[in-house]
Structure formats: C-alpha cells, structure tokens
Image 1 (spheres, rainbow, N blue to C red):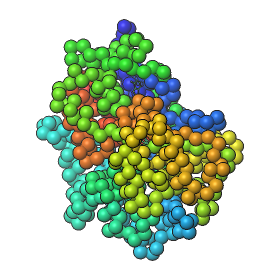
Image 2: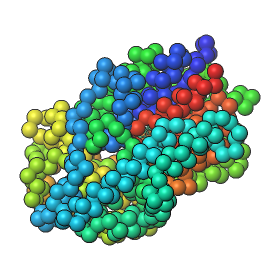
Image 3: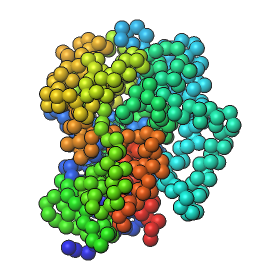
Image 4: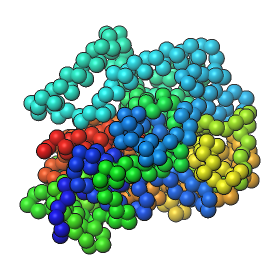
Length: 513
Ligand SMILES: Cc1cc2nc3c(=O)[nH]c(=O)nc-3n(C[C@H](O)[C@H](O)[C@H](O)COP(=O)(O)OP(=O)(O)OC[C@H]3O[C@@H](n4cnc5c(N)ncnc54)[C@H](O)[C@@H]3O)c2cc1C
C-alpha cells in the first residue's frame, strides 16, 4: 500500500462529486472510485440507442445557484438547455389541458386560478422557512453541542417568524395526504392530480397516503437555479460532467470502472478500501456515496456495527416504485390538443387514477394504464437525438421492485402498457418509435448499484427524515465506525439532484481537523 490519502469517496454520483470537490478545494488529497464507466450515477447521460441519449434523472428542480457559483460549474461547461419548463396536465380527450408556468395557471377555472395563487404563496412561505435546513447538518437531540443547539434554535425561530396563523396551518397540513390538501384548495380533478404529483413521485406513496406530502412538496421547491423546472444542456449528464471536472480541477482524482468490494476496517476504524480487482488503497477517511444498505452491509459489513443499528438500517424501505422509459422517436409525436409538447407533460387525469395504479403495485402488480411524467428533452437540446428525431423520457409509476412473476417475464407487458398509456394522448406514438429502453427498479439496482432502485436511496418519509435520515446514529454523515462516512441521497436531506448531502458531508468531515 502507498501513502494514505486524506479521503476516498466510493461512488461518483453527483453527491460523491460534490463532496470530493469541496474536500479537494479545502486542500485534502481525495480519490473518487466509481464502479461505472462514466461519472454521475443516476444523473449520467447515456446512449440508450444509436444516436439517442437520455439520463435517468431528467429535470433539476432542486439544484441551487450557490453550488453552481461555489464550484464555478459554468467554467466547467455547465449550461441550461431550458430554464423553466412549464408543467402541462394533459386531458385525455385533448380538450382541456391545464398549464402551470411561471407560477400561474392557464386552462383552469377562475376559482382554481385564484386558489392556486393563495396555495403557492403559502407553500412558498413555508419553503422559505425550512429551505436553509436542507443545507445544514441535522442536529442530534440532547448532544449538548453548540452547533446542534444553534440549528434547533434557528429552526424554531424560522417557524416562529411564520406567525401564529401560518405556523398553525403548517402544523395542521404537514402530515395531510395529498388528496386532502388538494381537495381543500381546488375543484378540477385534472389540476389536483397534477399538483399532487410532486408530493409522491419517487416514493411508495400515493395521494391518499398520510405522511409527508407537504414536506415533499417543499423539498421539491428547494432549488433556486431558475425558480422553475430546469433542464441541463447535454441532459443531466452535462451537469455531472461539470461536477467531475470541478472535482478534478480542485485536485481530486477520479477513477472510473473501479468498483469497491469492501471497506477495510482495522481495530474498529475504516482505513482503506479493497477494489473488486483486489487492489487495496488506504485513506484517513472513507466516504460512501452508495445507499445506506449497500454502504453498511455490502461495503462495511454488519459485524462492525451493533445489532440495533443494523436492524434500523435493514428496515429502511428501499423498494423503488418508479420505472424509467426512454423512447427513440424518428419524428415528433402529435399530442391531441397540444400545439407544442415542449413542457413536462403529466399523464394522470385524476388522483383516483394515480391511487388505483398504486394499489396494484402495493400487491406486486401494475396497472393497465400508468400515470407518467413525460419530457421530450431533444426539443430543448438537439444533441440528444439525430437531426429531426427525438427522445422521449418518462417516469412511469407505479412499477414495483418485486413484481409478481418477476421482471424478466413482465417487462414486455409493462412496456406495452406504458406505450398504450402514451397512445391515449399521442395516438401516433407507436409509428414514431424506433427503439426503447425500460429501466425497472431491478434494472436500476443492477446498473447503478442502488438497493431496490429507489429514487431517494431509501424512502423519504417522516420516520426517515432530518435527524432520522438514514437513522439516528448516522444522521450527521458520520457513522458508528470511526473513519467511515455517508454522503449520498440516503442521508439528509434525501434524493434528487441537489448536492446538499455531498456538501453537508464534506462540511462535517472538514470540521474534524
Ligand atoms: C427513475 C428515477 C428518476 C429520477 N428522476 C429525477 C429527476 O428527474 N430529477 C431529480 O432531481 N432526481 C431524480 N431522481 C432522483 C436522483 O436521481 C437521485 O436521488 C440522485 O441521483 C442521488 O444521487 P447520489 O449522488 O446520492 O447517488 P447516485 O446517483 O445513485 O450515485 C451513486 C454512485 O455510487 C456508485 N457506486 C455504488 N456502489 C459502488 C461501489 N461499490 N463502488 C464504486 N462505486 C459505487 C454508483 O455507480 C453511482 O455512480 C430520479 C431517480 C430515479 C430512480
């Protein structure tokens, strides 16, 4: 073994890259080891058919200007292909689509348009109060530490400044099912379905699930890159490449095609890693961008942890429920009643339709007609497809990780259902398709090293939130094993292309010396 590094980061997902860039910028000697042949994890842009490219994570609602500035990402090639995509709730017969753009509605009735203004203003007020805490290490209750006391104090103060009426309302709304929240404000079933989408996407939740609809909505509102729904130029991989360049420009090393097999522990301390190739590399600190179950069970080994802690990690809910569909199209399909399909198109006519699809998935099935979020990102970025042709990128809900009969047997049927669901809105879609890629949660697990194929590396829910993320004992990026840290989406604040877990973890590590 050669001279130890300051830190090894396992995984070049965006959080691993952000963590590496911050550590390297502070003068630490850092090496990032990535299993895949390109950086970016779920954000990488890949060719899924000759000439057609897409990324699993396709929009950047949670990414922030501060990270762009801190890491000079524009100097490393980061550009936006679109700053604020409108969201279009598609009406199945094409006659009454509702568009949400720049904080206003079009196509809705006057009462819903007025209600939306009040609803947005209230959510924005709440979001402003809690936004700083996504970017801070969670406090540890009863630690006696000044930093923890200050974070809790600031949290209390921010809530207090909402005023009594709004604070009471926030407390009332916080665990409401999305359905109840939407029913309180709006009339249109189509609008309710569209606005409930961001409360549940990526989770094992549907409009009737009581849990954290409001928190999830506020979390999705955490980005300030444009105030809308941005797309990166080159797909999300354009941002990933800029993050990789920023990390390397600050002095970090990056090795691709280098899966880590084990974390090496000596006398209770993590001191290095063993690659699948057998190579050993030592470092003062080992930081995992992999999900918590992979990090603790596959990489570290449960024998280094106490039994109660391993039980809590084992019980994390990591089954993914979102499939990703990529279609290569030889021309632009025609969506009934929509002149230009250049927004985020939501295919979910009612909350009950979403709920029914969820009910099927809860028991290992899937619906014949599937709710979807659809983009045609080649309209904003013509490098994603050959000239005149297009890419369709869709989040398809709900695709259970454990499907009855197994995904090998169900894949074609699920794909047919997804295309049939699209054809209800774009009748010529089948004639346009030249190739397709369906990534089920099992595919995501196998291709991206992600337990259960879960969007957030583990459910983003009230029991697994803030100082309980992934669980107490590891919620400040440090773990029970000295020298071993987490920096991925399974840590606070959660999933989404945001970089907060990576930068918070770097801050926790830098504070130690
Ligand atoms: C279907 C789907 C669609 C999504 N769409 C969006 C979206 O549109 N917008 C959005 O903001 N978010 C979206 N998300 C969520 C977002 O992609 C993730 O939350 C985010 O990518 C997590 O980033 P990360 O860096 O923590 O981890 P990841 O992106 O999962 O990266 C982890 C990295 O670690 C590597 N790794 C794992 N194990 C090892 C090992 N043993 N050795 C070496 N390397 C290893 C992996 O190869 C990977 O590169 C989506 C998620 C899914 C599943």
